[in-house]
Amino acid sequence: MWGIEVIFKGKNLIRLLGGLGTALEISLIAVAISIPIGIILGILMAGRNPVIKAILRVYLDFVRIMPQLVLLFLVFFGTTKVWGWDLSGEVSAVIVFSMWGAAEMSDLVRGALNAIPQHQYESAQSLGFTPLQTKIYIVIPQCVRRLIPLSINLITRMVKTTSLVLMIGVVEVLKVAQQIIEANRMSAPNAAFGVYLFVFALYFAVCFVLSIAARKLEKKWS
Amino acid sequence: MAAFLRAEHLCKDYISESGSVSALSDISFEVQEGEIFGIIGLSGAGKSTLVRCINRLEEPTSGCVYIRDKNINELSQKELREERRNIGMIFQHFNLLMQRNVLDNVALPLEIAGVKKKEAREKAREYLEAVGIPDKALAFPSQLSGGQKQRVAIARVLASDPALLLCDEATSALDPQTTRQILALLRDINRRYGITVIIITHAMTVVQEICDRVAVLEDGELVEMNTVKELFAHPKTKAAKRLLLIQDDNDENEETEEKEVLAS
Ligand SMILES: Nc1ncnc2c1ncn2[C@@H]1O[C@H](COP(=O)(O)OP(=O)(O)OP(=O)(O)O)[C@@H](O)[C@H]1O
Ligand SMILES: [Mg+2]
Image (cartoon, each protein chain N blue to C red):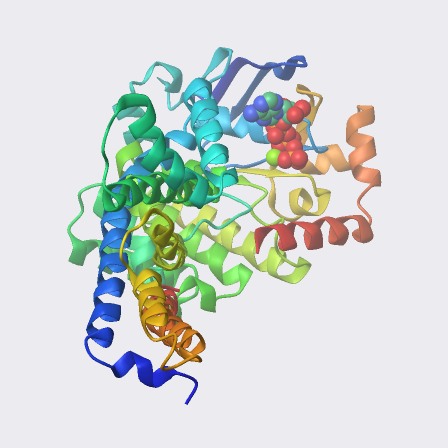
């Protein structure tokens, strides 16, 4: 029915799951790189240096406005053309998603920091807190609480967007799906629908788990 | 006897792109020990700036403040932090930590100052009792009313045994009845602990309710200073007369509601 049976033929299921594994791996490495970098950039963006702020603002806008696919092509083909680097699809993908994730994360951190009103800093000062104590007891706990659901949301978006990696030849979920569809064109003409449905289910499962975790944390922390 | 607090020729200019604003110009006054001193003025008169110069949340452009003959403006950052425990301040916003319960909120500044956790909590309980909410120790700020939150903020300040309490629009986010209760609490604290209180407000009713003396600020200048009785009976300046005139309740309620929305 619907061509779903194709998935369970031969090694297809294993290949699909392997593709999901590659996608997850790319997104998780990118997440691990982009969150700490994003936090640092976000702190700089909320700071006082106008030059650094302007540069980061341009970077953020650039990464945001460019479709991720264009960025992927830029890094994958561009670096080869210009510098003669031969980056693999996976590495290019990690670079692009890290750049993008760091930019988005920095904006979240900046927002969380700026959301703390001036009077809280003043209140802490008037109670004799040092600047460091103010950060530890007042700023960081509030930012973390705010950032956890937001960054899980970002991670979910990163996992989803890794499906784009297909375009530069990384064998991951959609690529595998397409291969399966091609191979079974004759025997199961409906396979496209079934396979994509299954791929959708895979992504849904991963992202659903992440958003449940986000909601749980949000509840627990508020 | 020397005055408890002396402000001498305080000036504060803010420089911005649109030019320089003189928020305080040559303000001098004295506050006696144990007094409840009001500072009143219209919005933008410089009240907050003045009170913030007292605990140096704002550095005056020139002039200085003495508290018990100690020049606040000569203190190092470290000495200033010490001194700030002696100068409590409460704000229109209560600034409680939402993820900690009331007891921990009150105990935290003590712990930071190096008091042992157990001792800090005991003291916190004692002052929660003093501000009339001993039963709320384990509640979280989100479960409290505005008045109760301000009581927590007051207990938190009291816990470090201050000699001076600065209140910047501390009742502006509260309804008239709660305002009266908080003012009564402040008066009680003033008598019980001998804490000198400086209250900033734009509402004459607040001054009338608890202040001994009051200073009128207008456009950064101290235009009149007198006992509350005398000021109400014989206001000398236009500014004071105007403030006495706009005492009608509508005006005040509107202001209160607006600030309440902002605070939430
Ligand atoms: N950080 C700042 N930068 C520039 N100008 C400032 C700053 N803080 C205050 N001012 C200016 O100083 C003047 C006095 O401000 P202040 O906040 O002391 O008034 P206020 O009497 O407390 O008013 P309100 O009743 O509205 O709180 C105002 O003209 C204000 O615009
Ligand atoms: Mg003010």
